[in-house]
Figure 1 (cartoon, rainbow, N blue to C red):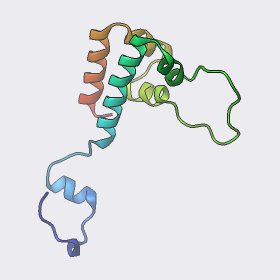
Figure 2: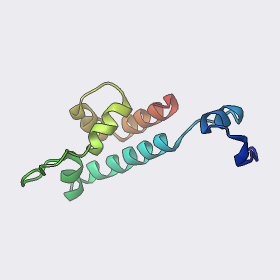
Figure 3: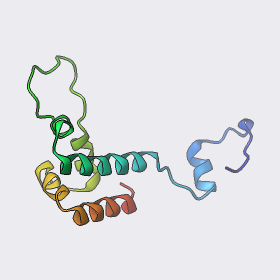
Length: 106
């Protein structure tokens, strides 16, 4: 970005501040997850069952993985997962929610 040599010993945060940039990878990932979730939930097939975590069988004995829904619930703001699933049905509302969360940078 700024052609800083590696011998300058600057941290990534300092370089980003000098370039007036912000980290955006996590926001981009969450935005893509949210758009994928909206598409899947409106379709209502097998992917719906997997993303909501409602499928039969035993749970693993290891540490539970974070579900996509849990991550999106924290990213989209305070609210329940059931509220988010209800908002997915209204495409305009869903797009607005994603756009607002992306602008806030949470």
